[in-house]
Length: 417
Ligand SMILES: *Cc1c(COP(=O)(O)O)cnc(C)c1O
Image (cartoon, rainbow, N blue to C red; front, side, top):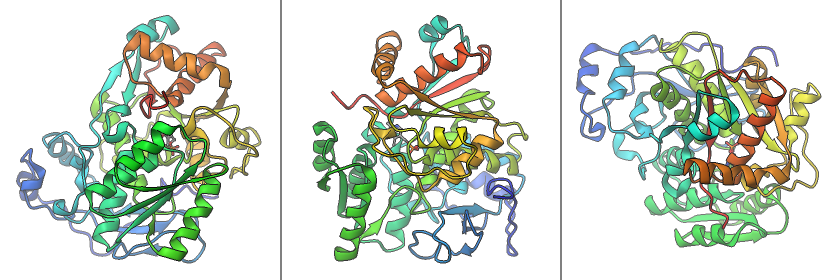
C-alpha cells in the first residue's frame, strides 16, 4: 500500500460552499425541523483500487476489485460547522453534514450516539493513570455501539430501496440490525454461531428478526448469509461489505473531540471486524480537513484475546494484511472474528498512529470487566475487560505514558449473564 486512504484529499468538480445563511438555518436544536442540504459532495471510493462510485444505488464491495467501499466527502475548512453541530440535539445524527443520509426525514434512529464520557477515577487511581476515561457505548440502543453503524446502514439501504436485510453476527450486530430493521419495518435475517449466549439469541428474536444458528464462528455464519441472500434476496449489511456502517461508527471519533475538548493521546479499542477503529481514523482525517483539529493523532491500540488475535499476529509479523486465525476461541464474543475485510485499513491506522496491537490472556478478561462494574458502576462487557487488561500490560512495560489522556471504549454492556 502506498498512500493511505485516509490522508489523501479528493476534490469534486461541483463543490458547493457552506454559506453563512445556511449555518443560521441549521441553528435549531431540533435538526429534523430545519431544511438541510448536503453542503459537501460525497461519493463512494474503493479503499483498495480507488475506483469511485455514486451513492445512488445499493452497493456492497467494489465492482472492480472487491475491496471495501468508503464514503469520501469533498470537505472544506468549516470551523463554523462545529458550533452548529454542538447546538443540535444530542444524537450521532447531529453530524448530518458528514453523514451519508440525503435528508433528515429518511433517518432511521433509536437515539444512538452522544454517549457518556466517564472519568474512571477509581480504576485510574489503582493504575496510576490520572486521565483515564471510559466512553460508555453500552448506553446505545440494544446496549452496544453496533447501533451507530446499523442506524446509518439501515437508513441508507432503506432509502435506496432495500426491502430486507441480512447479516452474520457474533451477537451484538444482529441485535442492533434486528432493532433498526423493526424500526424501518423491514424484515431481518441473521446467522450466528450456535454457541452464542442464549440471551443474545432471544434478544435478536424479540426484535422480530429471523435467527439461524450455525455451527462454527462468524465466518461460517457469513457463508450461510450469502446462501440466504442468493436464494431469498435481501441486502447484505456485513461489516465493511457495505459502506455505511463505518459512517455511523465514525461518529465516535467526532464525539471524542466534543467530549474532551481535544483528542486523547491513546485509544484502547477491543477489535473484531474493526469498523469502529477504521471509522474513527477516518473521522480524524475528516476533522482535520474541516479545520477542527491539527495533524496530531491519538495512538490507536487494537485489543484482542490470545484466543483470536489475527491483527496482533499481523502487526508482529509486519504484514499489511491479516491471514485467518485458525480455531478462534474467546469469551469476549465481539472479538471472535478470525478474518476481517478491513484488515489493511486497520493495519494502516496502527502504523500511521504509532499504535500497537495487543493480545490479552483469556483468563484475565472477565475479572477485569468485573472490576469496571464493581469499582466504576459501568455496564462493562468482556470486550471492555480485555481493553483494561491491555492497558495494564502496556503500563507495566512502559509502552503507555501513565500521564497520557487515555480513552478506553466500553463497546457494549454485559449481556452474557
Ligand atoms: C462488535 C463488537 C466489538 C468489535 O467491534 P469492531 O468495530 O467490529 O471491531 C467489540 N465489542 C463489542 C461489545 C462488540 O459487539
